[in-house]
Length: 260
Image (cartoon, rainbow, N blue to C red; front, side, top):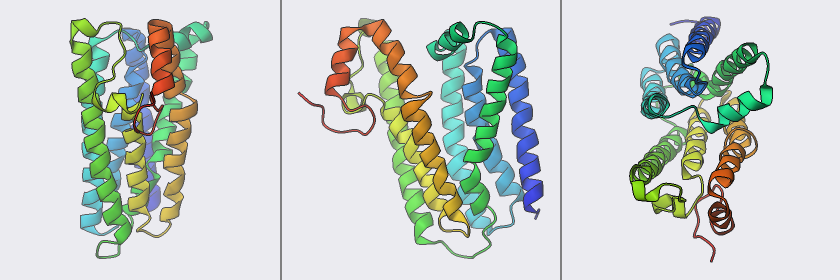
């Protein structure tokens, strides 16, 4: 059993230390996409640390560890495979072109910022790891159910896109297979739903309302910053009118029946 300060100190030093090492690696690889691997892995590492150092009810800490750890492990392995087999993501090549000078320092700040985001976004499972109440609350049951739906949905979306890209006949075309025919970014939607599940789970603990800001922050980043805007800007450049038609007919985020 450890106090809150110990948990936060362990989490901060571990995640920022990992981001520093990944920043060094990106200099050697010339591939800033390794930060995506670190961001995802960092959240899983924080779940392990918080569960291990937490003062809460054992089964609840185990649930936090499994929910975050399994999600993080699956997505981390997916990102490792992508980063190791593909050129640097277009988002980062565009950032390089925009920043132009002092790239090492600027990317260092970027990597550290991603580590700080990990610490902020881990608030729901930090809160849950300190809840000593015995028994499961309705919020925790609902959060676990949403988590199951979200993880399955994201895995299906990733598998459908991976299979589509693996077919040479699809080169240069827009994926409309399965979930991708109902949402232009079903992976982002289910990713966001996972954060909803974490926040919902935390509502079963004292101060759990502090975790509500996490899915709100994730939604902002996905819709306005590094998610959909950057991905779609690149898609329009590479696929032109076929992607613009896709934009007109298919929902950007929430899956729903396509128009037309």
